[in-house]
Figure 1 (cartoon, rainbow over the protein chains, first blue to last red):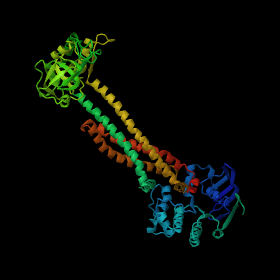
Figure 2 (figure 1 turned 120 degrees about the horizontal axis):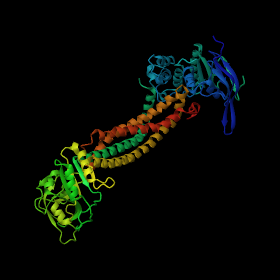
Figure 3 (figure 1 turned 180 degrees about the vertical axis):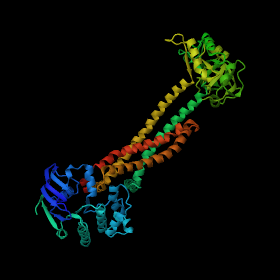
Figure 4 (figure 1 turned 90 degrees about the horizontal axis):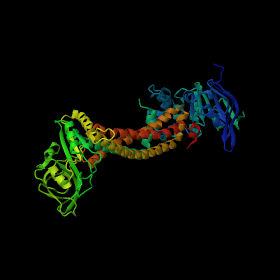
Length: 225
Length: 403
């Protein structure tokens, strides 16, 4: 295994320029996350968790400092390269599931494959991924509005995994689920970690954080612990 | 392979079908307006060309100084002019045109008349009876034989219910000693003729009767030269021009043939067609606003969806494509219905306005339907460009936060 960490924050700051003045959401964060780690990020509201997830998801770039993902400096990538990195390297699981409402469960999972290979999936990968999260063919044809919260999150996990990304980013993945379903989802994520994925999870729930090998606590944009 | 972005666009249109359909109606109206107006204009041009082409073998020689009115000065019914084609000029024309061409000197004026107690107004042509059948067709009755005999055009005959034997008082109602002519024949309809002899709404009398009434003997309003071989028309025109217009700076006569008159009239009709097409185009502009509005609504309603697409690795170009597809679908819907509508409405308009649909299916006429459809589609696509651009350039973080 290479010594280079999968993710490296080097003095990363993120400052939002608001009408009321500048707001520092991340303050000179330095952090390394290795391949196949399971990391939980915790902290109160406004501590910078979402900003950090946006940086990790390459939805945003640092105001200062450098963020390296898979050895590449995110800020030096073109917009298209960042898009491709989001598509190929990162799987994003959201609290609100964020499935595409006009597509069926199957099509939602197939969608990242179409983005990557520019053609409909003929390999059966989307079906296999849905099957892995407990979806049969009949369920796969349902639209997101016809599914329960737990089912939607399973589809979201399948979608995040279908392009075989190195990193799974989970933003409060159990936040909209009951406790039992939440633990079922966490069991799936643990299984993925066991299979070699790097899982980074943002949560308020200490019980959920217990699934992780390492917990990072943010406070006022800085790492408190 | 079915494109997922096209699928998404189709589903979005289906989801808001009524709204999409209403927006497309603007395009339908625009396409129908452009196509129908274009076809109407073209059918008018084709009809006029057709009518004028019947006199394609005729050269018309006039004197620019001639004004409407009898060439003599003894007229009691209208204004006069002192010049026309003189006897000397006529001789030169005959000489230049050669023996194979038919030469028809014509007097003409406008006059009032009364039929029983019904007043009217029409053109009066004075033509040698032997020349009449060289270029006019008598559909009913006979040619002029007596001094007071007259032929009437088909329109005036229908309007005033003229029959063989009807008598027409020529001149103003106040004139006590008005001459009377007797209708001996009715001329076949000519429509708009290129030889400047529009007989449908006219009375044709003998040249002798005309000069007796209006004077101006041997000073003709125009001289028509009908060439035997149409391929020689330019040579004959040149010969006449050389013979008569010896002073280049001040030509004595104006010489024209059907092609120049067709060109002049179709040019005017073409301008009118362009103008009415522009009016049709305005409705497409209105439609463009409607499509733009619907597209912006679609983008605004799907901000979060756009955020999802962008955050999971959709390229900006793919998001743009998805919204442009939606505009294309609206365009195809509108242009398709508009195309069918144009066929039906255009046919009805042409039939009603021109009275014939014999030119409707000719390529130059029917071409306006695909032209209108392409314009409609282009307007839709252009209306979708900004909303698509806006969607693709959204910040995925802001878009995801949107509810």
